[in-house]
Image (cartoon, rainbow, N blue to C red; front, side):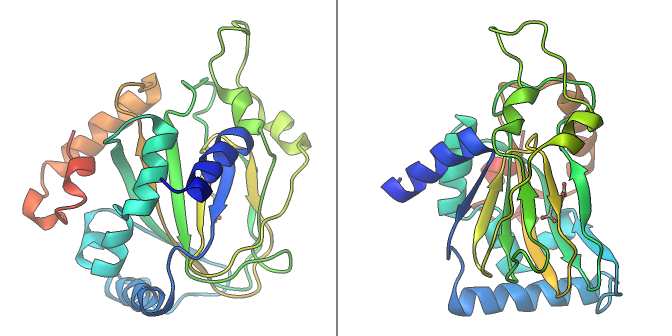
Length: 246
Ligand SMILES: O=C(O)CCC(=O)C(=O)O
């Protein structure tokens, strides 16, 4: 791993969010946008309605090569594997997100499981942005270090999972991104999205460390594996297969 990516891993661990710039450029970015828009047309989301967040998830996304490639992109996976200390983590969710303007954004929250502390760094998400975002439109905001409060800690055996009231009180900072940048987010970090005034699209996935499943994650795993039984493995790109199977 390059020193730059190693530094990103340190930032993600301490802050809960890290941004790797310019992972997708030129023709690759154009091809991903084309596949993204095609998937939304084919899967009956149409061109987008003002104020609506469209979300596609599941194996039909694997039919769009430029999107499918991102779920096992070597540089992205190196960072995910390092974060999870797992050489072949399990890919839990593959998703696309599209917000059509004018959209109010997303309120302050954590993607930690309600009422449950997690094993440190047992889940990791990545999001490849296809549009620029900044303070004026769609900035992802977050509270650096807040993910740590959701982790089981030997030093603090009485720790309770933060409440929504705690999450509302955090000091949120903004992010600025260019299309092609990748956001690595520890799901537990407190985050929100500023109001959106231009199209905001990204391809995202979440990955899980196989050896450190929480009670909630174990239940979700069982549900997802039942769905995957119906999908022949040869429909899954070869590079993704090790992450796809349990
Ligand atoms: O759209 C984003 O950047 C983040 C959305 C969000 O908050 C979430 O999916 O939990």
